[in-house]
Image 1: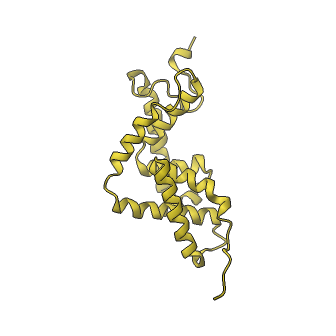
Image 2: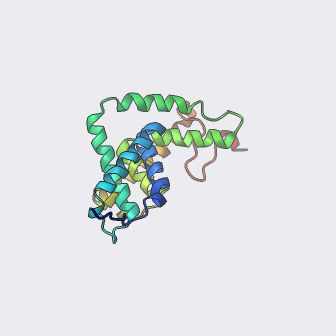
Length: 182
């Protein structure tokens, strides 16, 4: 039997796949499992790869679809999400302002509804164009733009709620924490 070499550089895409998986499942072990399952699926279906679409987008689409398939089977997603959010509070020591700030932003990001979080992740973190992100998610570009707009508005609302103690001193972009105003 003739061995066929993969038509794409999968190894070069692992970091993006891991970041996106972590954004989707919010658990390092599950993210690794999701990446693994996606890569197995990609290798099994490498004949469907279209070079003009790009390896990264193709692999991100496979990862996204693998995640959707897993969600249909797993009923305990909400319980794991709550447990991972509780762990975030203990990640950074309080005396490291930047680490605390990053944990606050991450916590706010993880509270977004999944549809908004995955859309914002692909555009803001993976730096995909709106069209590329829409293709990865299998949705119209207008729907993607709406999800990103709602995600950003929700993060801004969380910034407004910081005085109420929900997420202290959350600054989205260029904001100033209340105790920094002197």
